[in-house]
Length: 95
Image (cartoon, rainbow, N blue to C red; front, side, top):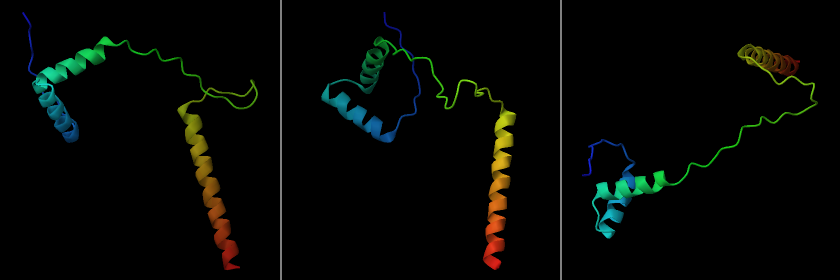
């Protein structure tokens, strides 16, 4: 005995249109087509994803451990440098 469950899915309009066309071509209901597609997708093994390696530039002694405070300080320093540069350009333009 096959047990089925009703579910509500939100699908892209173009995707549902194509799925309905394909189901009609195969003489299937939309539900049957979705079930076949899900079974096919879920029967394939999930590809193994390798461990992420952060690219590091510079020597091995260079620090690669950063905390949010480090980024905040760098962002503030960048903003200050940008404001100083803009101010000096305005002063030199007036002269």
